[in-house]
Length: 118
Image (cartoon, rainbow, N blue to C red; front, side):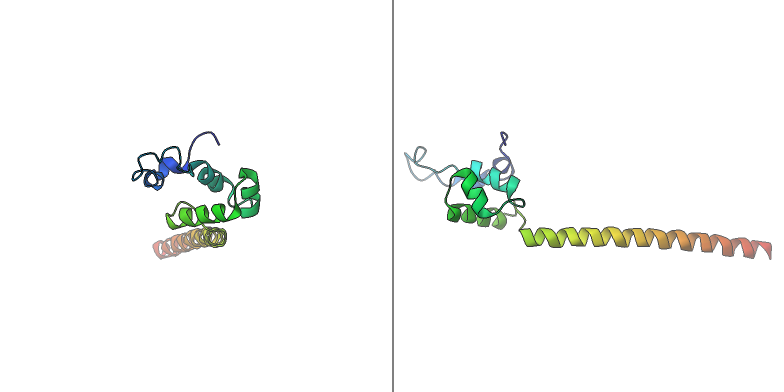
């Protein structure tokens, strides 16, 4: 977790917090570390576990999850399961289509051979 992930993807998330105050740099809260940790462990851990690992309030973690999901940087846990199911279903259908194409091509070749014989 040494390289920042989210700040490279969407740096404007962190730009708006300090622009309107002259001395805000030392008072601004740095969410980039939290966001990177959430992005990495959101699907393996609960919000409580993430909050405990980062020594943060659970409400702050929940807020950052909302921000990341709103900005399309994080997929919800249920949405991820649905997408995984759809991907497996598409793979199954693609395999079935490939099987049917092979069957029809061999059948078509057999029909052409019979027509050539006549």
